[in-house]
Length: 402
Ligand code: ZLS
Ligand code: CA
Ligand code: ZN
Image 1 (tube, rainbow, N blue to C red):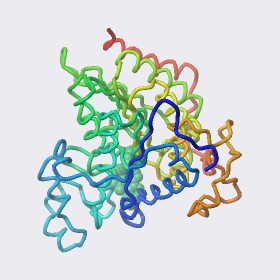
Image 2 (image 1 turned 180 degrees about the horizontal axis):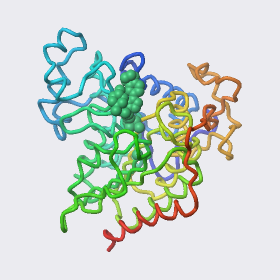
Image 3 (image 1 turned 30 degrees about the vertical axis):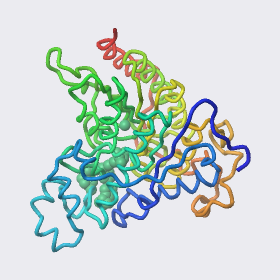
């Protein structure tokens, strides 16, 4: 591909297994693993594989998952079948582990064990590439499943690849910072490291009548006197319709100060693409350029960086976002600078190119054709709102300074 070269002075590695794309949560379910295929087609279509180490990862094993998850829960995931007969016989476990009903966030589908081990395998391999020094930025777009708990599936997430990856990184690094720009609160990761000061979790999310309902401004870690982990959970609850400049301003201010005071040795960034405008589930109004500039900002700290996927329910926009962010990681500029119509078109030889040909819009990489949805009650952030939110975060950070 014309002019696509490896970045100078550092290595980016890309970890994936194409088998993950074949899985289905059910036809009406918003989580669509084929968005990963779309993403990969774009990444390869642009020739970004010339800029990275490519790794086809192996599925994780039961014992890898058991580093965080409960064995009984893992056995259940490994052996449960999707047919009604088996489900009837396992009703008690189903209720305990996934809350089944006909409208289920976490359905039992065929190949569920393969799906969870493939997602986790890619993320764990990426974490290992960082800790071994093989790579400086490792990418696993099938990971980022931040809601899964020790013994429970939640919010489309069954196994928490992020927690497992951070646990791995803690063997090599003293302090790991977790940053989460998915529109949902990163509750599973926060809960797993609630009582430690070696992991700081920072989540930006919609808060108020929105899943999972946690991550309010006072959720900052254990409240007991001098408990380890007190103040090491930082939450930035936001409202509908927050846009590029307001989100970008807050993200830089709060993330910048967090890095300054916490001094992480490695960073894990969950890049959930449901914070984009026009997402089927999300309520924010970010465009791809603004989302990507958060990645760029984190990358500029030159720390070992694990980049993960997460939410994202408008598949074309997810693929564009993560392709753009792969390019950001590689220091490759694919689109034009204005963050809207891109001068570079989706290459002709990208299979599924048709999927990107939106109604009446250009099909450039950065152009989010579904952006700027008409929200019912978008919040207009005033200067004062933003200053107050930032001030509250900086106030919390004062407790861990020094
Ligand atoms: O962060 O809001 C909820 C929970 C419910 C409402 C929906 N019903 C199905 C269950 C009970 C209170 N759940 C959220 C989960 C969002 C998970 C985000 C994951 C992540 O992006 C990381 C990967 C939710 N929002 C929307 C839906 N669920 C949802 C919409 C449409 C459907 C179809 C399939 C299933 C049932 C009908 C479903 C869920
Ligand atoms: Ca978040
Ligand atoms: Zn989400």
